[in-house]
Amino acid sequence: DQQVKQNSPSLSVQEGRISILNCDYTNSMFDYFLWYKKYPAEGPTFLISISSIKDKNEDGRFTVFLNKSAKHLSLHIVPSQPGDSAVYFCAASVLYGGATNKLIFGTGTLLAVQP
Amino acid sequence: SAVISQKPSRDICQRGTSLTIQCQVDSQVTMMFWYRQQPGQSLTLIATANQGSEATYESGFVIDKFPISRPNLTFSTLTVSNMSPEDSSIYLCSVGDSVGGTQYFGPGTRLLVL
Image (tube, rainbow over all chains, first blue to last red):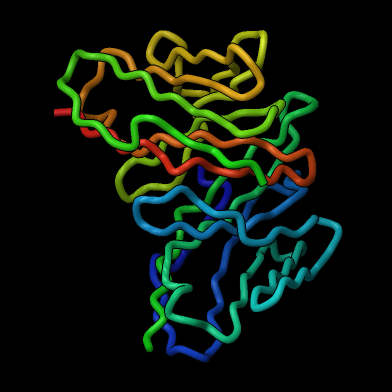
C-alpha cells in the first residue's frame, strides 16, 4: 500500500525555467509534508515543509503547494539551476505512538536541469 | 540542524555474516531512526531507536535480524544479521526535530552482500 506516490520517475528542465515536481497521498491523517533532495552517495537533505493547515510555503527559489481536497502537493523550483539536478523525495509525516513523527516517503523523481 | 556521521560509509560483506553500522550525532537528540533504501526504491523505516528502551520496529522488520542499540542521546547502532544478497541496500540513520516531523539524515552506509 503506497500511501505517498510520485508518479513521474524523471523530469528534464532547461536552466532558468520552472521545475514542478508532483506528489499524491492517500492518508488524510498526514499532518506535515516535506520535500528532500538527494544526491548520489549522500543522505537526503531537507528542503522545505508545509503544515496540513496551510496551502503554500515559500523559501527562496522553492515553493510547496498543498491541495488537501485533491490530496496533492507540488514543489516548484524557479529558476532551476544545474545544481538542482538530484532525486527529489516527497514525504508525509504522521504522529506515531503519541509522541514521535513517522515519515513515509514517495518513490522519488529524478530532476535533470539542462544548462 | 544536527551533524550526523555514519560508519562505515560502505562495505562489501559475505552472506551469513553480520555488520554493525554506527550513527553519531553532534548534539543530544531524543528521536533517532533507521531507514533502508533498496536499489531503485524509496526510503523505508526500519525502526525508531529509543534511548533507554527497546527499539520500535516497523512491520516486516524484526529485532533478531536488525538489532539496534541506543546507549545514549548521541549514538546508535544498527546490526544487519545473517546477511543475504537481498540485504544489499543503503542504510541511513536520521534524527528527528520536534517541529513537523522534520528529520535530518546521515550520509548513509552502502552495503553490498555477495
